[in-house]
Length: 115
Image (cartoon, rainbow, N blue to C red; front, top):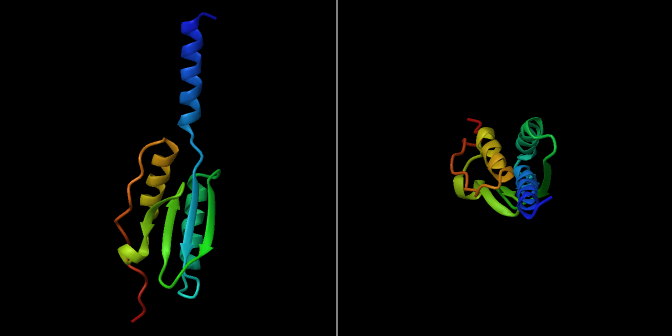
């Protein structure tokens, strides 16, 4: 193989590795607030779309429903006052897998309120 062909092969291999980056999601939520079903629903939707995604839950403080992708906070219920839409989280995961910069999710659906 000539130097040019080796270089092209290395670039192609690197591009293939970058095409499917590893994504790790951590969701921190308030269990006493009753947010576990919301976490389970979101985790199920993520796993359905991306079965290989690593998703972890942690118990958080009062009112918390915080989502990190690869260590970067992408959603905060404490800041937004609601829960993320599944489609927005799926889009953020797609961006992370493609190596694109992550942006904070600012859309949120209101928490369920019983009147």
